[in-house]
Length: 109
Image (cartoon, rainbow, N blue to C red; front, side, top):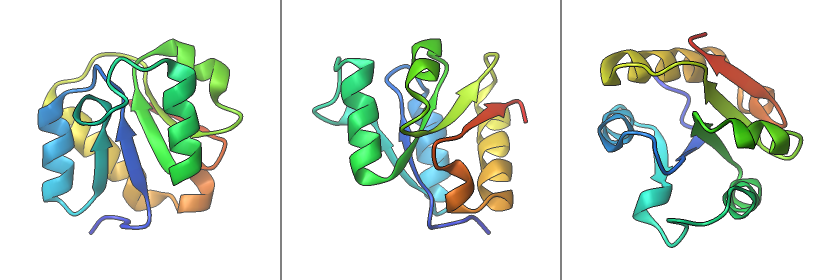
């Protein structure tokens, strides 16, 4: 069972199939490429995440400079879709929403 309190925001280059798989497992996942945020600056995406209480999932190290205001799941290496989905689910199941606030969780975890 997943932690339904946590909402994720997939950065632009994160795989859509992983976002959909997480949705299928009950998580609230918004993907930048599905919104008006497509091609927006990292700062604008971070502001949206902060305003909506979403945790950004990304491989973009530029977000590490903005981590004091947002929750961040940062991929330290490329992962296959199944592994990425499992890693995110594991993190979301083990941590409470407050543990994501202004924090960076590194995956692989």
